[in-house]
Length: 244
Image 1: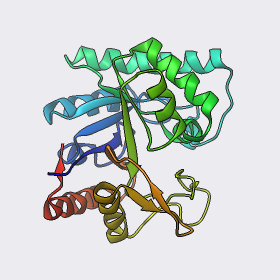
Image 2: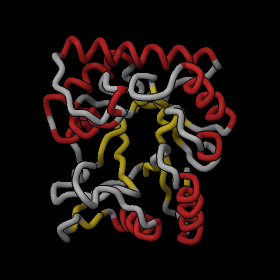
Image 3: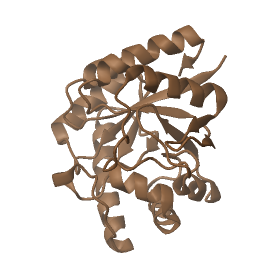
């Protein structure tokens, strides 16, 4: 039977954390820098534990004003300080509730830059390895972060996106460009099924891009996230794809 991990970015103050945590199998919980606060983070952790959902850290560039979506070029020492600060904070909140982190997924611009910038990808890999080498690194399928983590012999999870379009090079179309986000649920579901069953996605310019789909992301901060997650789970059930 085919299977897929279904993840969502949560603890960001979105309206559907409780309901989404009943539908996903992994949660990437904000570390409080790009969004959220200690109370929303602790609440998301508590709900994830109740639903037996794996808990991951979702650290960001220090860019709360733009939800962590502004590109930045930070010196390594500064980047390391920001990330260890965030990872240490969420680790403490998770352990306070008797649970453990299982993975790290960078957020926003940090995620996208690390997917295409090999230097940043290696920097993140070193920092994440320093923090805890047992944690899986979640990165864009085929991206530089996934490559760097594999080279460092760290556990890796290749991520694909249901509601984002792809370039010829396998990167996500920037949100600043038209058509970056798929708003039609049926189109997003069809893309998801193709990635899981056939191991490829069609780029915006019509090219086939091969990729490995270990986990599929649902954006928890969108108004339609909950309804889409329900439709996606129903489509997976119909297609015989187990969510785990």
